[in-house]
Length: 281
Length: 265
Image (cartoon, rainbow over all chains, first blue to last red):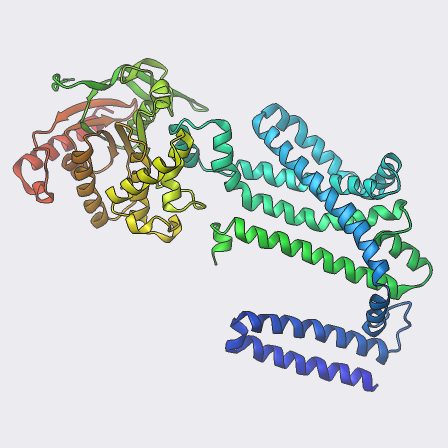
């Protein structure tokens, strides 16, 4: 009971403190905003711990942060090996190949109306295939190791970026294109000096969607066969052994790396598209 | 139609020019039997109601539209060839500056495309920025400047590669009257200093009379020329010339021409 009351009281206090912080002058500054976000995160952990202990939730249903934390600390080598296998080798490789392929395909489609009619429907068709059907097939084709995971990621990230980039390349107005024409600019000059820069907000939207899909694809693909390392492998085997603390530790690593990857892309976006009304602030 | 200035060299020549757009509602005669000669150093304004083909004619000179009949030459070449030889700079109704480039970067853009050397680019940008009095704003982005300043930057961009013809499609149409007056005055000074041939599309009678050595009055459906007026005003024109008798007489004749074009329908 004391845990329940304590957690709720802490929640109330933190809430009040955050409301005051956000409203105060400090809340406008960078340090203030970080403090508000940190306090919010800490509150969720405290509330979680309090509720788990207060209601005596069995650790198989939901372990508290006080169980997950030490698990992370003691299994760092395993978690690191899983991270390298799934995020670095599977997700990032697949992301790089898939986005590069989408980039080249988008320009090919842009150059040729014939390809636009042919390739876009095929891309659409492939992206509509269910990942749980596709993953086992790709595992058979490319083997158990990270290559098959990267292949799944390629299929998943290709289409969102392709669609966004094709739309972005068509997003210039007539005036901007007429200007290029009066200077007798070649196709490639028009592409690099006008249409690619103008497409950047679209491209980054595609990249942000692709970033979240890449991690999901790499983890889920491991459910269909993998060596004895990797985040998807860890989750599926630890669930079978009722090692839910390890499952949650892996989820924490996945969430952190996914957020970091997304944040990195959003940060690059704010550098590249500083001129766009949505970024000018 | 008369064609008086014969001593000067012709730069743009249109003979029996036709331009028909095929639309879903059938063909539209944007230009019908247009004959006009523009000489070197002329300041020619095109005035008329919407749909009279004045913008289409300017775009045809720039090879942005392609005539369906008659002949059109720029320096004796086809518009396409003339464009590749950088015969003209084009100023549109909106400034059309690319928002990811600074003012200097925007002016540099046509120079990059045409392959000028790096230091030559810098020198030219500095020179034309000075010409339009924007020297302090080289490193600003377009969205940090007022509409009038953006339009001046776009004129600087059209001047940067030293084309001898300047084509301007209602460049000051979106600006308020005070800014427009000032830019008109600056444009005349610039014209006097550079000796360029200017084709200028406008809706405004005072603007056309104040700026031009020749005024081409056009009327719609089909787009055609109804009058060509050679201005007796001197080349040097203070703003108060607009109260002179000559000025008012020309303005009257332009207005009559526009009215006659409407009466034909």
